Image: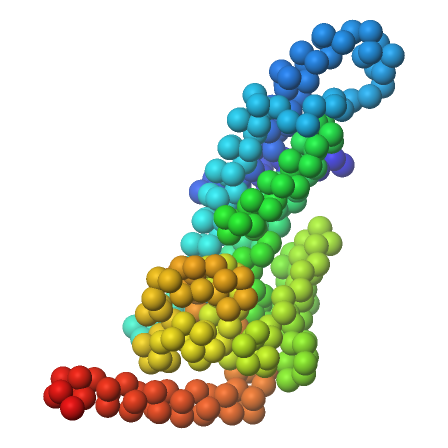
Length: 332
């Protein structure tokens, strides 16, 4: 079965109720744009003699097409941005319910007396994994088709642009959070959900190269390095910056010249990512609570050691900070 048919079947399958609320790649529409490429058609009609000797060739030789590009890339960028935004908001809501506290946690436990709340959360996680995977494949396929039709590398360049805009679907920190949610829910020990959710493993926690591996539907394999680039240990109390790089909270605060108790989001606007040196990436940092919880469950001794170290450092920083504030207010 061709991917176009598979994607159409997915859009009208069991999760149609969910997909109606979210944006999806207009795969068929974008394919029609490529077929109606006016530049390619005019090139063919103006070179009848050449084309008649090469009727078996489907692709044209133009490197770019203004008419096609204006509709194609602009529309695809909007769709990718909307898909990333929908995925981010739905995963945030799902994980917020999973790690709920206070009255919300009490209400969820009350509801679990009448329904299996955990199973409902897991089912939504499955749907989100399938949603982001299918749309990522659709974008990959349509860009590959574009490059084939135009004999160009503009499709590959567009992928780089998506990465620069932070909307590359399979490199989202929220995907790591979903993988951690999977493991925290005990699904790696329960075979009922493996086929639809994929497989997740959390390897080498206390070794040199800790990593999370995701085997998504359609045989897509992803591996995320969980080593903090500053302390060179497994990330503790991790935060993902806007650029996608993940650090320990204490390390990121140190790099941004703020104290731990002030928090990452108190970092000045001009602060740069320690790896890519991009400016302004701290304000929208994501606290990866599920990954932190996974580390607490899977490596208790390491977690306890790092927690004591972070608290000790926070107390020291607090004393220095308030001593400086007192001197400033009193004048000596």
